[in-house]
Each structure stands twice: as structure tokens, then as C-alpha cells.
Image (cartoon, rainbow over the protein chains, first blue to last red):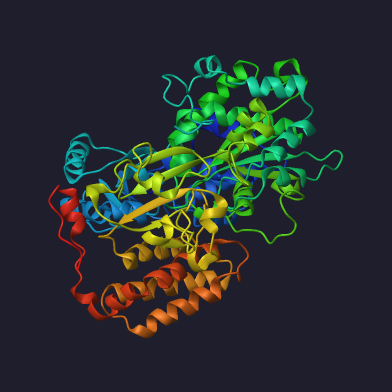
Length: 175
Length: 450
């Protein structure tokens, strides 16, 4: 996987304005509350993961120590501490989804993309990750790509989505 | 047809917008509270209603509200717990996505009742698109003067914010949620002090589930006594049930508390029976944490009484033969389901989600996952089943927060009611192939589970 080391870590003016707005929503002296929302934005802006440089940058914006960012970023499962593919596919594996065939969905994606759970495809396009319950139990099995839910999956549906994403170079983004 | 208080207008096109929500009587509770009631009167109505927390614990909401400390000059907060992460539960997502203003109205009324000028809706990060819907609704409410300064010319000011989490089940525990909202790891706090005294930023705080806060709206509209008239006994009002698993009609159903479980599973008004007319094997009635019950005990209590969808009836018989209503995450399993494998998915979940603060939970959940993995792959022994029992009994009640109990109960109940199946796996585990989902997904007739 290629990592652009020289990339400048800096929000655009527009993004910075959004970040400052978020920081202002908390009472004086409680700006650390903005950390999780700002980390989401940083992850979306800087290739889908949080490098130490990105976390240091976030710390400097909020005015807290870098360690305070590291300990939070590493706690929450939505923050990627390692590079991921352009399109992160998250398949729910917990009870209701398992009951409705999530294991087959995972196996199918693994075979089709020639990667295992947790791996990234050689071209850096897809990462597959099994995750815990995403609150889509009544529409199981399901997967999430960025902010989008794909529900009531069948293997055919997965096939056509993957084919489409390969062609269009799908990117996953939460925000 | 049961009474619907929350989802009555859910299918009205455009109900997610302020104008349509108002045309269906939206924000009349806010109007009524601000113009005709004192904050304490609102709290009294909620007390009278008998409303119990809809997030899982079932604690009386009015009582929780009355514990809120009110020192002079210290801000108070209302925090909505929209972290919905209990496996099998998806009702809050449905409510927020379809009818966001119901929650917003509930937040403002609750803020008024509790004297809070600010409130936060803490929503799980994966529900990002729902957070956007809520933000949109909040923006509409500000524009219409329903949020902000001097709401409806009452002199009451209130601001409401949406905060997204980032993937942590533990943040559904109220003190972990507050830690997270303060920008920290979601480690639950030791109680006391309770949030009612020292919550968000050390200030008095009430944390309530989405459905609980939404229910405040009909309570104010109809009056607490009328709300208490719905339901059965101390299970008053209506409850959203998230139904999933092997049923014909999975989805979110608003039920009057007290509907018989059998009717809920088999009636066309609700789950519509088991897929493919298979036999019912087991049900997890209130989200992954509550004890699993075999078909005979979920349909009838140990005394042979019909089991009802209510806090008391589901708990009848204690953990020996009963369960809990919990969050209302109703997972139905047909005869082809492997209880051992299902338990493995639960235990893996709790291991993944343990915050790591308390040793019994941190070590115990991982240990149980490993043992179940071993049994599942045909390498277990009978003593492993006893070991599982032993470990869960040493987690329960020995941790700071209830995640420990939540991890122990599914293990205990699966062994209590399905011990034979564990032993079967120990003896024949290597020969059990988990192929039926392949058939199900491809629309083929499934082989019987043997």
C-alpha cells in the first residue's frame, strides 16, 4: 500500500471552518469534547486513517496533548490506526446477521476480492473488515461502506455491488 | 390493533419534515408544557405515567428525573443515549430516521422539565446518516423558533446538539457515554456519584434513551394517568420492539406492553410466524445481554401461564426460567440454529467491546470466547462446559459497569437451557458443518440440522 509521506497535513479553509464551529459548541474549557467529531473529519480528509502526524495535528487544533488523542483514537473501532483501502467494506457478524447468513457474505467477498477479513486488496482499492452489530438486525445480513448501509444482502446483490464499485473506484467516507 | 403513541404517523410521507410533523400534531406537547405547565408539573406527569427507561434497565424515568440535583448557578444537562449498540436492537435508529422531530420535541420538553439549557444527543458513529437527519431536523426547529432563545415566547432557552460516537458498545453505558462526550475513552465511571449529581462536565445530568425521551411527548399530550392506563401492571405504555432472526416479518413494532409473546411471534400483525413454517427453537427477548429462553419457556412461564411482552412477565421465574424485556431486541431462532455458535457470536462481541477496565470482564470475555471457539471446532471437552459456567459466574456482579453481567448472562442461560447441545458439540463438533446458510441465501431447500 502506497502512503504519501510528503502530503501536507492541513485542513482546507472550508473544513477548518466546520471544525471551529464544532469546537465552539461546547462550554468554555471543554473543547476536548470536540475530539471525536474532529477525528472523524480528519480521518475522512486524510486517506481514511489516522497517522501519528494527523493525530498530532488534531491535538494542536483542539489544544490538547498528542497522547490524549492517541488514547482516544485507539479506543474506538471506527478509527483506523493503519492505512485502509479506498473502499472499506464492513460486514456485520453478530447474532442476527449471522443467523441470516453473514458468514456466507464474508466468504463470498473474500473469494471475490481474494483477500481475507482484515486485509486490503493488492491494488489498494478494497479493505474487508467484519464488525460487530450495526443496528440493522431486521434487515440482515448487511454491510456498511462509509455512511451507507447495504441491507437484506444476497450473494447476487453483493456481486453486483462489488462489480459496480470496482468500475467506479468507490470510496468509503463517513463525512 | 394495539395503540400506537410513537409510530402512529410513521408512514405519513414527509413526517421527517417539520411542517408535516406539525400538521400531525407535532410540537403540541412542547406548546402545552411551556405555556400551561411548570417544569415540576411535567416531571410529575412523567412520574404518574409509570414510564420506565426504554434503553434496557427499565428504571422508572420520573424517579430518575426527581434525583437530579439542582444546585444554584450550576448548569444541568439532558443527554440522549442514541448509542444503540445492543445486538438485536434497531428501534432507535428507525425512530430517529423516520420521525426525528419526535425526539427533538422530547429533548426540548425534557430540557424544560429539568431546567437544562443545553442537551446533547449522543449517537453511535455508524449511524452517521441518521445524525445528519437529526441535524437537519434541529436546524428546522431553530428556524421555527422551537429551539434557541425564548422558545415560543415562553422565556425558556434551549440548545440541542448532536454528537457522534466512533464505534464502542460500552458508550451505551451512561457514564461511559459521558466520558466519551467529554472527548475521552469510553471507560465507565464508578458510581456514586451518579450522573444526576455529577454527570457531564461534573454537572447534574440526566441520561435517557431515545425511546424514553420520545415517550415524554405523548405523556405530556395525553397526561401521565392516561399513559399509565395503557399496558399491564407496572409495565405501562407502549414499547418499541426490534424483531429479527428467523421470522417472516422482521422490523420494528410498537406494542402495548402486555401482548402475549405467542401472539407477537405468530400473529400477522407482528412477526408473522417462523420462516418456512419451521419450529421455534429459542428466543433472545431483549437484546443480546438477556438470558436466552427455549421455545417452551418463552411462550409460557414455568407455571404454565402465557408469557407476556412486559417487564414483569418476561422476568417471571427469575433467571432459572425467565429473562428480561431489556431493550426489546427480540431475536428469534428456528430449529436449525446452533445455540453454541450463536453464543460464540455474542461472546466474541462482548470480548471485542469490553473496555478493559475491570479484570473479570477484560480477561473473562476473551477466555470464554476462546473456549467456545475450541468447543465449536470440535476440540472441547465436557470440563470446558463447566469451566465456561465457572468463568461467567466470576464475572457477574464483579465489574464497575453492567457489561460484565451482560457478557455473563447469555453464557449462563445457554448452558442452563441447552447444556445437551454443548455436550453434543464436544462429542461431534468436528463433524458438524455449518452449511445451512449457504442454502438459505441461495434459496435452496435446507438440510435438516443434525
